[in-house]
Image 1: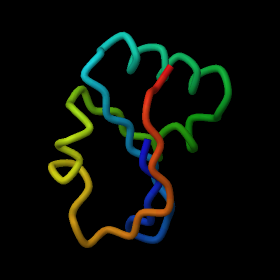
Image 2 (image 1 turned 120 degrees about the vertical axis):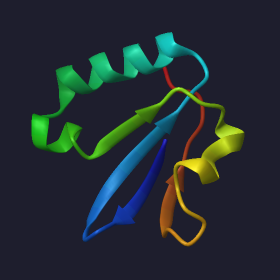
Image 3 (image 1 turned 90 degrees about the vertical axis):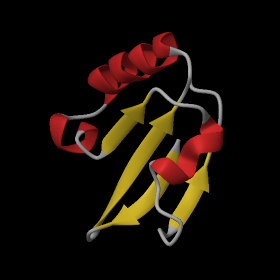
Amino acid sequence: MVASWYSGYWSCVGLDVQGEALVNTSSLLDETVDQAEKQLVKLFNICHSKIEEVVPKDTSVRLVAFNLV
């Protein structure tokens, strides 16, 4: 997951090549956050090495964590 400041609010981006990990993460979000918070999370089924395809180089990033559940 990558937390970043985007257009005046924090957002969180998750990348994983395993679709099941993204499904599990989405389910966990459904159980733990409200819809407004979930809208700040974007999940992508791609390799971590392709992060620049999702998060532009000049984006302010505050946290990077690997291995979604």
